[in-house]
Length: 377
Image (cartoon, rainbow, N blue to C red; front, side, top):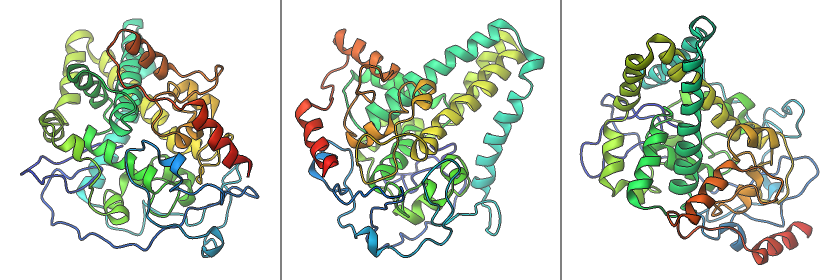
């Protein structure tokens, strides 16, 4: 998730994957990392039977995995070693973001946006009316479901289905209004998360602390470049003028929405539509990064910490079936069982029935059986 970004200056404008700087700064060198092992931090369970480069795990995934993986036994001993509350996830290295480092102007701007939306939401009890409340609920669905989960995540990041360009761009614009960054930055960071999931190169993993995976990683705006290098995983979006335009004008769009809400309903609409709604969608999105890698169950041995978490699934329109997602990243459907509520999938299914969504990918029974066999070994 990215909050701020810089405008492009040429065809090679995309220098930083997440949380762009709005002012000039010299390019950072690409850091070279040794191959990172897949990590096994879930107690006695062993994930050796399924590697990140498993042919089943990689089928139709949007990005390539690390080319090499070391055995978990070769890992250095944990530095921190503490377990996250009510979980068997071990914190290997607790990362301190707030102290002991130099904050850039972009770090401060990002923190200001997050703190500002939360402070604005505190005024909600004093600015309540039913019209403002329903504006917040409506924008929660529009920006959260249509924008983040359907567009940014399942359509753009994983290409799990295709839409007509006019509809793809409309849903992506809904995601822009979630104030989580422009599509290029959001997708780049998310693809890196899958490529280096729960390793020391993951942009947001609970192996560096629960709150780091939940939100504080956002405030260290150089961290993704330092871990993953300059992005080379969003060429499909960078070549489209629409997404380049959104990246260069990103902050203008939420500002315009706030002005429109004020014109429609005054300050209560701003408090509920831009404060409460944005803070709510923030935390729901962040819970997929944090809670769904800490609490829940693992139906599949995916070689990472991803979990299926029913209460996050209810809040995040089906995104909480996260272990299912990591097992079959290409799938437009995350709730693979009939009882696993997945509102985003129901919308995709409806779009498919209307002929608007095509090439909809879901795991076949054979693919699930093959992975089940690997799980059993």
